[in-house]
Length: 148
Image (cartoon, rainbow, N blue to C red; front, side, top):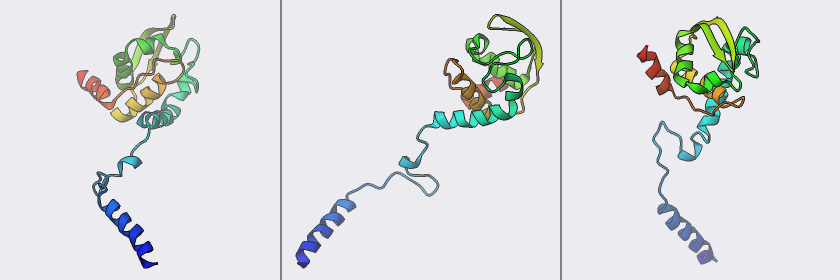
């Protein structure tokens, strides 16, 4: 009976010794534990920022306020030039702006968000309300921050 127990145990040890360890260091998680969907997580973080910083003017569904705050939903302005949108968050907007054929003439102050936060909130906006599903990166924001 002992030989029937010893054979499976020996086989298990031989097979497990041949397995490679997952490529991890002390500070990193195994690859199976790494973000399953980083874009989804970015959009979730962006929604939290949107709900704190943007929802008052642009509303929960991105519709804006008629004749006061332009819509972000289905926005031709937003989808036309991401750099212009990033600049607006970094430096604010003032003066006339035409969005979806309607002229707005208001002021949006610069937002006090870091590059990651701007990338997250814009990724959330671009991936909702029938916009063009663009992913904005912190590097894109940093480039615009240093360009002006």
